[in-house]
Image 1 (cartoon, rainbow, N blue to C red):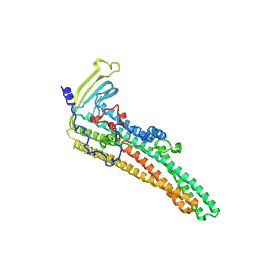
Image 2 (image 1 turned 120 degrees about the vertical axis):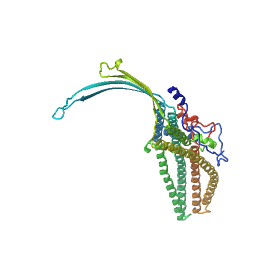
Image 3 (image 1 turned 90 degrees about the vertical axis):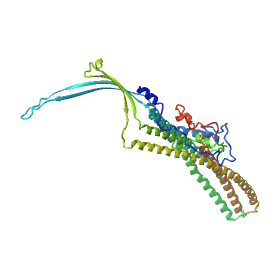
Image 4 (image 1 turned 180 degrees about the vertical axis):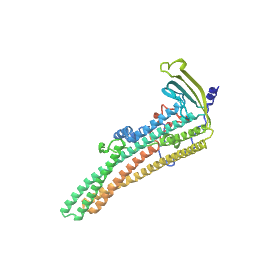
Length: 489
């Protein structure tokens, strides 16, 4: 009857069932005007979003990061620890079985003392005891304490998996940004090298004109100053590129001395990124998913704390053989067994259970606040990236017009100088303006490429948590993080 009652009661579990914290999400992003909306076609490849930049070398570097990055390896080990904790918590739902075998020797004596006042006689002996037993115990989860503990551990495991996905996305984003900036520096280096060559020709032409008595010595000095200052700018780019190359080497898990990225003339493409609705962002971003799973774990901990007020029921059984002689140790008269339930209830603990329940409820409130803050931060990051890309696009259009005008001005002033209608000072000023506009144009492209990567990361990238959790049930029937619908970010 006791067993039947416990099985019936075990259908319930103390503590509140998990409900996702209420959030007020906007119908769309504030900066979405003029942007490409998400479509079921999913233009952003999940898991390989960096392929949008059309660079095979970049793709290979990211794959090396996924395999060899040491921070990622540490997080993956932490993820496996969390998975093992789930297996341990699940094992508590089942009976435990243990066995033991032992030998003990003991003695005892009695006696009296005989003297003028006492008389003692001592006798004694040594006895052996052989013991072989099999023990079984099963804690019946009447109040749901073990199930709530498993729910909490599983939610913690899912949070750890989401942390792993968030770290991977962050590292991938960092590597892609470094690589794109390196390629922009390569283009700036080509621009400066071409400018140095052109200024060297101008210096030669000016020196010839000076030798012929056509121009003054000051024109030669100006041409030399322009050449040397541009050469210094070209040299300055070398350490910037080296630092980016070193950062990429560390990200893929190799010493900086073992990685060399060759200079290439082709720049990566600037992709078109469709944007999902704000509500879909909550299921795509791994950091938001991790924050929600921690809310789920804290909610289950409340049930564990509440179950501490109720008695624990354990059914135990043991049996074996115990004898004083090894020869007849395993013999029918030496067998023993025991079977019976045990109720354990804490009657007084000085308020420890009340304090633990209060702590669990406060921890839940803390995780809810952290989850809501993570959601707000995710909205802000998307809005920031959207407005940054929109403004940079407008700025790039204006800057291109300025660059076209500077190139035309340079062509005209060069013809005028060759015709002798203007002095070399005018040529130097126009050349400096054109070069600055060329570099500004490349810097804007670099900023737009970086902002596009940041937008993809803010939208959740292409993390695939479902692959990590394919063998694990999802707690409280909530959708696993990363299982958004067909709409793409």
